[in-house]
Length: 380
Image (cartoon, rainbow, N blue to C red; front, top):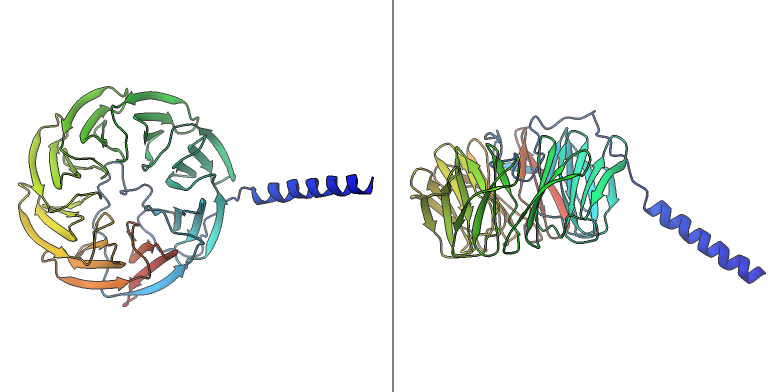
C-alpha cells in the first residue's frame, strides 16, 4: 500500500508540475515608460512589407540595454505599445518592455515560432507541429484558436480581420483573425519559403521553383505569375504599384503589381535571400556577395554599394540619414543613405539574422549569441 501510495503521489506531483509549467501568462504592457511613437506590428512593418516612414535616429548610437534569453532569437522582432515581442529557437515567445528591456512575460510553444500582432491579438506561426497557427489574446492570457496550417517557415501577414500564411508544402491560406475559419486556399506546384506581401487587394509571394505569384486577396484567385530563374526565399516588397523581389538567380526584379510585367532587373554576384528597403527614389538590397546595393528605383541603375565582411543576412531599414543592415560577420552597419559611407557600426558576439526595428530614437536588434540589443542616440 505504501509503495502504491508513493507512486500515486509521484504521478500526481508530476502532473501538477507539468500543468504549472504550461500556464499561460497574461502579457500586460508596462505603461510607465514610453519609447515608441511608431509600432512595427508585422515583419516588414506593414502589409506591403515596405517598412515605415523614415525614422529619426541620430548617430552615433550607444547601447541602451541588452536582454539574454536562453537561445537564439528568430529573424523577426515586432513592436506595439512599447512592448517588443519575439520568438526564440528554444520555443519561447517573449514580451519585453521596450524602454528598459525588462521581461513582461513569456510562454512556450511546441516548436520555434514567429509572430505578428494586431491590437491585443498576437498571431503566432510555428515552423513545425500538429497545429501551427495560433491567435493568443494578450488581454486575457489565453488562446482564441489554433489550427493545423501546415509547416510555416514564413512570416504571418495580418491585414484588418484576416491572417495570410504561406505554408512550406505548397499552399497559401487566408484565415479569419478572430475565429480561425479558413476563407480560401491557393495551391502551388512548389514549396514556399517566401512570406507574402499585400497591397491594393493583391497578395504577392514567391516559391522554390522561382515563380512569383499574385492573388486576389479577397478570394484567392490567381491574377498573374512571373518566372525567375532561381529559388525565391526573399519576401516581396510592394511600393507604388511595383513589386521588388530578389532571387537565387542573383537578380533583383521590379515587376508591375497589376500585371506582373518586368520593369527592370539588377544583377548581383550571388543569391538574394532578404527583402529590400524602399524610400523616395531609391531602393536598397543586400546580397550573399557581401554587398549592400543602393539603386535608382526608376531603372535599377547602381548609385553606390558597400561591402561587408560576410553575407548580408537581414533586410535593410531606413532612417532619415542612414540605411541599417545586419551581416553574418556579426555586425550591424549604419551607412549614409546618399553615399554609403559608414556612420556607425556595432559588432556583436554572434551572427546576425534578425532584421532591426527602429522607433522613436531607438534601434532594436538581436544576434545568434542569444542577445537582444537596444541602441539609442548618444545625445539622448
